[in-house]
Length: 212
Image (tube, rainbow, N blue to C red; front, side, top):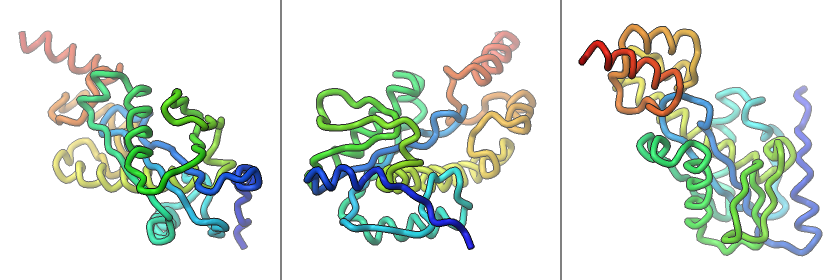
């Protein structure tokens, strides 16, 4: 039997009197292609799901099932997609931060505390706490992570239909050996590769020299 995850951090905030604790996380900072996706979620208390954990420890089917459970049970949730043009314009860290802020702003319930997975938000969202490896400690952060990852994985599978040569459905835009090999062979023929990221920039610059 699978061990039930222990994500006890949230309880400390509810015990302090906070009623609506929002969890916030993103997916897609590491890839060299595709958007970054952020999600924010508030869940009623008490909430529990025996298989919700750090999304990286879950199988695809578990994440899909958890995604459905979260959107059905959430008091409020929001998902924000930040496109590649914005990532290249303001950098991936700021794009991730922007996505989290926009997702939080779209929640239709006033939250009185925010928990993020290691992301500083600034004064606008006080009080909040940026927690290192928060998706391994907080149930609401883990839920936000699942919403973000499932949404982004689905987007990358759709992009695979548009640009099948890269294999987006397999690696989701991460710089795997196959992805890098296809990038060198075909060049940057998609509109979703991040031109400011080293592997893409190097290929793009190299090919541009021959175009000239």
